Image (cartoon, rainbow, N blue to C red; front, side):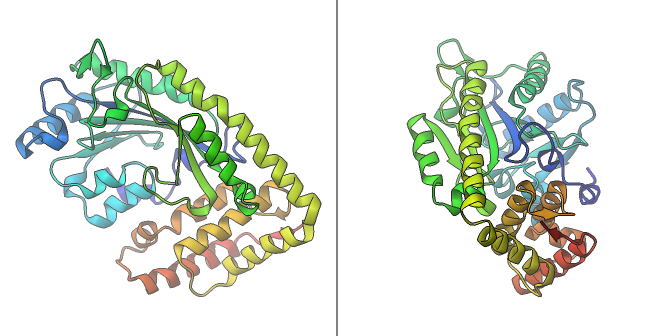
Length: 355
């Protein structure tokens, strides 16, 4: 897998298109599977995990349901490259940080990621830009079916697919949407969303999933339990809550414009100005400023900047991307300066104008 080639793109989940893409950044469905004849990764020794990697690598590279796949041994990757893949959501933080034989297969569009020896023997992910959960489910179901034709997954007639984490037992499915909710955050209405999702047994997580912070006003909404539900039911459960959240965010956006357009416009314009002129800036501030810019574009308050561009800035201002593009390791202070330089140069090509 040529990781340097990835530095020319943003990947499927940040393409900036698809249904309701002003708020729904991406849709994702993940399936967890384990091989019947091997212990779970947490209980397997290095020899068993190596056998699992070899077996599954050969199987998944032979499937036809998702086109050509490129494989990378995560075990042998330098730390920077592993973090680079985490930032692109192609592997999890746990997959990056654990040891032993493990790998990942990715398609050229970065719409499919198949992790071997993460928490489970196999974790399959399918991404789509915008709201497209049914499309994700159809794609990952084809992949799962084709792989299961040549291997035996651990399955119980009573419980369903068996997984390392009890909350994944059943379908082994995690359905999620990544939402950008800056207006709800600005007005502190986001707590109402948290409370409503909790009552519906849905999880609200940060940008990079479990245990991560909600950087840049991005939130993942996903199911928590899979046992006793069919795959179609889980897809519909998550999909059914999205329209209400979108309506809430849009109504609050409209209210912000009507109540104090000048103040909001000023906040957004200042964010653009800082991004275009800062000499040093950290990741957290960058994401918060870009969140306001993204809001301004969607409200029609900024011209000559696009959502795909903001998504690109968001990704390539992340620590590993900055260093990967520059082909050098940077200390924090140097990264902050490099980030500011990148933003100034990239935004100089697109002079924004205010409406």
